[in-house]
Amino acid sequence: MRRLVGNWNCRLLFNDKSGQEIIRHAGVRQQTTSSSDAKEKKPVEADNNGYGAKHCMSLVEKYDHENYLCTLLLPRELRRAAFALRAFNVEVSRSVSGNKLEPQIAKLRLKFWHDSIDKCFEDESQRSYVEDQPVLRELKHTVGSRKLNKVYLRRLVTARERPPNQSFETIRELEEYAEQAFSSLLLLLLEVGGVRDLQVDHAASHLGKAQGIATMLRAIPLAGRQQAACVPLEVLVRHGVSQERILRSKSDDKGVEECIFEVASAANNHLQLARQLDDKVSNKVRKIFLTAVATDGYLERLRRANFLLTHQSCLGRDSLLPARLFWKSLFNRF
Image 1 (cartoon, rainbow, N blue to C red):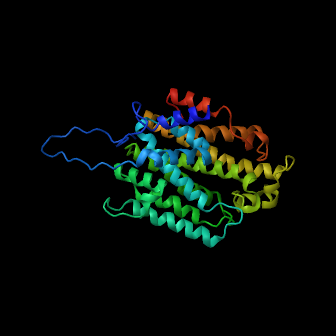
Image 2 (image 1 turned 180 degrees about the vertical axis):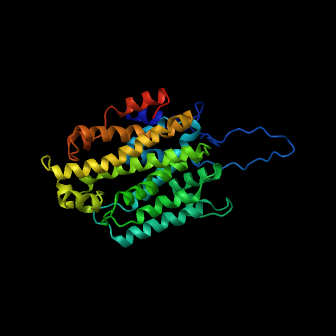
Image 3 (image 1 turned 45 degrees about the vertical axis):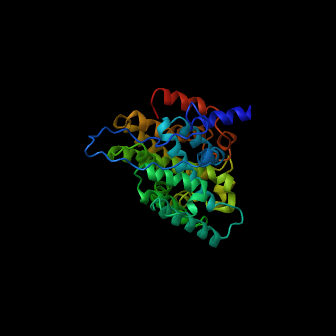
């Protein structure tokens, strides 16, 4: 059964007729031009047996399961590039995670990914280690077939340069971090889909902030004392709560409840602002914004648990998420 599921997942990236040939130029819109000025673009060669594409897909499935489900529901022509971008984001995030990771090692890892972005934008004739790294190979394929903004890719790396033990001073600072680490990825996915619209970018910015804040709240019980809680110091001071109390998160601690409520409310406000722009986005963009469903689900579970981060419903996976994602996708909602 596991093999059957794996084969079915791989078919989402491959042609229906052959499981050995990857869809080339996925997502590149066909353009009809006159024979006088039409120029053929050199195709980006796929790797042998599509190992890079399958590796990216498996990486996202293992470390970013909710976004893995969302990506499966994207149009076929966007899926391979989306998995490449999400796999790159997973690798960057993993570079700074670990119980006993030395800060200097984390910096070296981030520098590697930062320098690799420039390598992916180099000419095809220049050979480098990118060809030997499956995620970078897929990222280079995406860069070669799409028009991506290098700034957004760099922001995914520079956002993680923040020391894990450094607390956020204000809600605004927390939102700025979430925008760099999460909104940037959504903006890249919009570029993959060929979407260029200021209103849509505005919605992506709000949705990324909501997703980022919710994700950091979920990480508090899992990370423990390995990193500072994402609750800003201005919120802690306002309610007279220490970070130690946030980490303990007792059910009868009303001060902690108020702090988590304030941070979760900031995430929910950005989510609602993104959804208010629903009439400004196309059906393709709505599928890219399906991450809002998982974010909304977590915030609702947190609300029902009286903002107790360690409540069982807030720690595990949402068993109803696949059904809700499919339902929202079916009706082109987010």
